[in-house]
Every structure is written in C-alpha cells, then in structure tokens.
Image 1 (tube, helix red, strand yellow):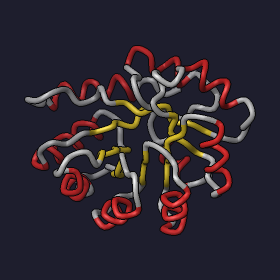
Image 2 (image 1 turned 120 degrees about the vertical axis):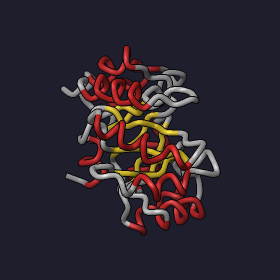
Image 3 (image 1 turned 90 degrees about the vertical axis):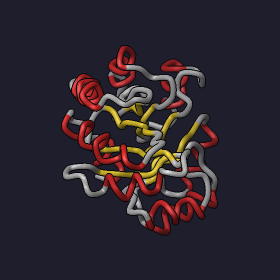
Image 4 (image 1 turned 45 degrees about the vertical axis):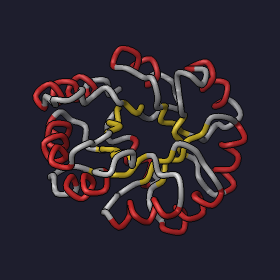
Length: 204
C-alpha cells in the first residue's frame, strides 16, 4: 500500500483546517485527534499556517500535512515546517514532479479526466476530487472513476457530515475532506471534538 493510501485509510474524514491564530493550533489538533481524526490538513491560506503545522506536529497521534499548496516554493516551505503530506487544489506537471522528487505523500486535486491522466503519467494514483459538490457531485465522480479502475479519491469541497456517508459508500472513495469540523471564532474545542467523533464514526 502506498504511503498516501495509508493516510487516506486512517480515518474517514480529513479535516481541512484554516488556522487564523497559531495559538489555536495545538488545542485544535488535540480536539480532533481525541475525537478520532488523526490526519490533519492545514491549508496555506493564512500567515499562521506554517507555524500551526510546526505546533501541531508536537501533538501526540497527529499526522499533519499542508493543503492549498500551489507551487514549488510553497511545497518546500511546507516540508521545512514538518509537513508529513501535501495536498494541492490542482495538478501541474511542475508541482507534481517536485512532490514526487521529494518522496512525500502527495494528494493533488483533479477535476477531469485530463487531470487524472496527467497524474498517472507522473506515477500518481490517488487524488483529491475538488471542488466535489460544485464539480458535479457523486455522479461526476462515478463517471470519472469509470475509465480509471485503480484510481482512488478523497472528494473535498461542499461535503458535510450529513452527506459524507454517501460519498464514502462509493467504491473508489477512501476518505473525504471536511471543513465543517472546526467552527467559526470564538473556537469551541469541546464542540470540535464532538464533531470529530461524529465524523470518525462514519468509518465503514
């Protein structure tokens, strides 16, 4: 089993995290891990993201990676911060080759058959289907998966606790990405843990 597949099979939901304040990183990670979600994607959308990754790496049981990685410079910054895996919203040959060269588990975003074929050319077979709901939903993913029998997916974008189980029931789907786990500020980490427990219970 490839390292990225092991990560994808760790829990049914990978929290997609936007960390505004690095001081929230440790309690956020502790709440999610305690709730049963160990694989944490910190998106590089805020100035606090890299510091959050460094801090979360110290939380026992957490497997911390960087999301919204769009170029080689961000890839290197994420690796330097201790990221254990990389997620991107799309796939370019330049970024794909760099991630393969670094030998870091890589989950690139795809939206169509051409994206998947570009990934397969790079030796990749695990992808983030993004944005899942606005890109045609489950019907689109089923149609895309048809010609690519060995490819596995993590749909992300617009998925909620109420719909995650339907996505997870699809054979090529190993997990989903979820942005619903952590609420808006002020953060309630007890509620975060409860949402994590509910999400972890979706495991097939």
